[in-house]
Amino acid sequence: MEKLIIEGGRPLHGEVRISGAKNAALPLMAATLLAPGRHKLHNVPDLRDTRTFIRLLEHIGVKSERSGDLLILDSTELVDAEAPYSLVKTMRASVLVLGPLVARLGKARVSLPGGCAIGARPINFHIMGLERLGVTCRLEGGYVDAEIDGPLQGNVIYFDIPSVTGTENMLMAAVLAEGTTVIKNAAREPEIGNLIDMLRSMGARIEGRGSDKLIIHGVKKLNPADCAIIPDRIETGTYLIAIAATGGSGTVTHCNPSHLPSLLEKLRTAGLRVTEAANSISIDWPNHPKNSSVLRSVDIKTMPYPGYPTDLQAQFMALMALSSDLCVITETIFENRFMHVAELQRMGATIRIDGHSAVVSGRGMNGLCGAPVMATDLRASSSLVIAGLAASGRTEISRIYHLERGYENLVEKLSGLGAKVWKEQEE
Ligand code: EPZ
Image (cartoon, rainbow, N blue to C red; front, side, top):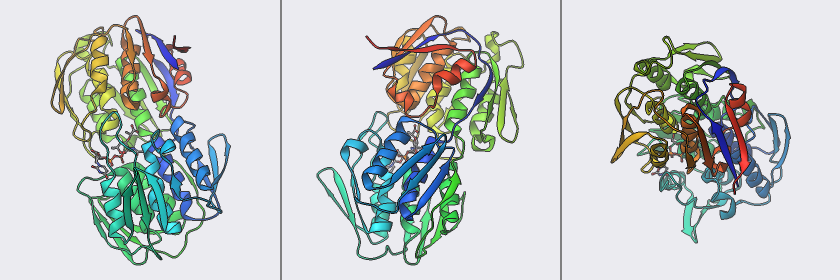
């Protein structure tokens, strides 16, 4: 396994280009199962998770070709309707093939994903939704066997919690159903808007884009897509926070500022100057970065979009460890998403967990020291990278395969901003 070495304490300066969104690429790749033919997806990031998803689609019979960030998926011949445990256990988003496979073939056998570091993460809403559309779902041996004779039947689906992949799965199941489906309390993340745009371009009839009520009028068939993945808003936020945490200044390009309403406001409240343009965001310090009174402590509470994103909670906590006062970070989406706290504490952060909240006592901009730490999940890992960039001395982050799931060309992008960072083999 590899580890990431960071010589911290160097302000980041310059430009960094954002890649396509992992959490849009995965559902859009799944949607290619809905229509036989050659689908073209542009701006697809080359990540561990997208490579795993391609392997899953190839297992099902899809042919893939990649040329740069263009991914061509030919789903003409499907030979299997199964997502095996061997693949699903490494990437829970594999559950996204459930809806399109049932819609296209009338059946699917998908391994239950099992829990992960941040929580139990069940898929009961996905199963409830399919059953509402007339699908029979049997849970046996760690798999869900879904089956229906003939087309799915439109119906009303209500989500207790606005599940992102749950909404995406139901959208993909309903577009070929007979009649109309209404999804109530649907998730509103930008990745869902990207999926709706793709499905509409394939011939789907969907109303309510961007709202929590989606209306899908089923159609008989769909055509192959040719569309682009939106920029990764979580990668965008991660680099903005990293630049701020190192007292630097820079511009994040090929991003969509409108997808980060909450984070940009929180950074401004913390004292950063944040300037938005059509496809870029610039960030810098209005006063001297090393004046720790500049970084104000700001509370955050994670919420479904457009609230503060849970996927940027760990990163913001690393920033708040450098602030000048106390703040409270509350995680409302997942039950165990504070795995980064113990590692940040090893670097000198003063954080106390109290149920779903973490109280962070900022130690000022020079408050962190480099240390050997361990990555536990994707976003916790990026929090440790940010802390390592801001800390004095050397930080070594082990198990960086977590990072490679969601950050394309991380070492190159950070080096381009002036960071001293490289990979080494773990002893
Ligand atoms: C998506 O996961 C993202 N993954 C996650 O990003 C993100 O953290 C999450 O949405 C929340 O924004 C992808 O899009 C591939 P949910 P998802 O269903 O869809 C509970 C990352 O770092 N729930 O919106 O799995 C669930 O346990 C990843 O890129 C049920 O109880 O999340 C959670 O508490 C991490 N039953 C809440 O709902 C269900 O059937 C929201 O989960 C489904 C979800």
